[in-house]
Amino acid sequence: MSENRETPSTALSILGDMQLNRQACYRALLARDERHDGRFFTCVKTTRIYCRPICPARPPKFENCEFVLSAAAAQEAGFRPCLRCRPERSPSLWTSGGASTTVSHALRWIDDGALDEENVASLAERLGIGARQLRRLFQQHLGASPISVAQTRRVLLALQLIEQTDLSMVEVALASGFQSVRRFNETFQKLYDRPPAQLRRLRRSSDAPTSQLSLLLPYRKPYDWPSILNFFAARAIPGLEHVTEHAYSRTIEIDGAIGALQVRDSPEHSSLLAIIQFPQLKSLPQIISRVRRMFDLNADISAISTALAQDRVLAPLVEQRPGLRIPGAWDGFEIAVRAILGQQITVEAARKLASKLVVQLGAPLDDASLPLELTHRFPAAEDFRQAKIEKLGMPRARAAAITNLAARCHADPLLLESVGRMESAAEELGAFPGIGPWTAQYIAMRVLRESDAFLAADVALQRAMAIDGVRPTAKQLLAHAENWRPWRAYAVMHLWTSDSTNTKAKQDKEISHAVLA
Image (cartoon, rainbow, N blue to C red):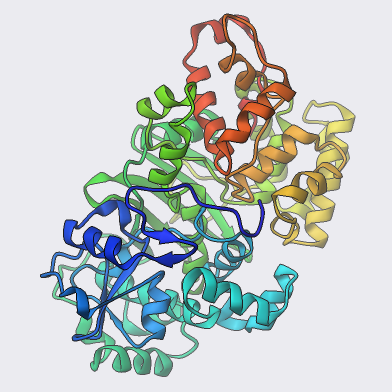
């Protein structure tokens, strides 16, 4: 993806060259149009409060409004979050297709807490650019500095924890990324002219165990929960994951600490409900960030659907599943291993092989507080040895590919996060032994969250795009898919979903790469 790629037009011309159209913003505000929730925020000059477009409060006069691209821009300008519309509940836009690739990657690391302990120069170095250029890109795309974005993330997460949990203020400060309780109190006193404890409304104490947190993670409607749940269910590894009719659960690990996660839909709140059980509160921002990526909660689904619906083949598929998302990854190394592990075998065979790997190489869990269905963690990179992997029953070359990947990820834990932009990501990943073009694009789609990843040689895609029984070649499919940029990965999901329900596809017994991982 190019640094200055264009975003498809959406209902109302809110953005033009990353500048807000004030008249269009005000019309969206008066209509309380939820399609624009998260695309801009309204700063009310008379109250010094900033709001979402759907705020239930009486609309301010046009001359009293300033419109900004992000909550961080509003707070940097001295406005405080509205306690009625709750900006912390707004679905995120800029980590999907709305910002440049560099800014999106930076936001991902900021969400993971990169600026809680590092500085802007360190973050810029990770991205391969200078600190000045990073600040310029943030001002261009978000209207705020990286530091302001990180500070806003802390404040909005703290507001969410104050409202939705029974955590003490000390625990809220730690969990939201503040370096000290004093700094936490000072920030809220400055914003609201009152200590944070006074922002907590009277609420009944939760009946959930104190070791659990339940948080609502907003998404843009529509959200096709059944499709993403079915995707994970078909690939769930027993002991590591557990999927029921309504929920997805798995073991999670960060910095050696082990916990559990359950996710279910909460359509009445336009959110997913994440129930988190983890021993380290300081890891909460990273857990939330990973869940949002795993369930593709940041997608600007209206823009994506509008763009893809222009194609005659995709239009009926988008109409059938307007909220289809791309399943992401809790852990990039895990998905990369599973992608190699499952090459050229059925989804059920791939799942059985992955299950054997987890049992033989992954450590069993001895924490009695975790759900009974969750018994193992996925093996760490240092646990992989070729001789052990070959015993699972796979070709030696495939075992060598997994061993090589594990060794490289052990030496560089950020390896799968540091590959370049879309133009070079596939080439970099394809240089790994055993990772061909398809697997590289698959990893780019699910691990790197590249919305424009595309798998032109995939059997299922070619089958779904057949005309009068004649399938396109990979070259022809690639040419047709130019019209789907920058959302080709979403087109892949629509075509896969369509193909999976095609009776003829099942009768053909062809093995599509779509069954992997």
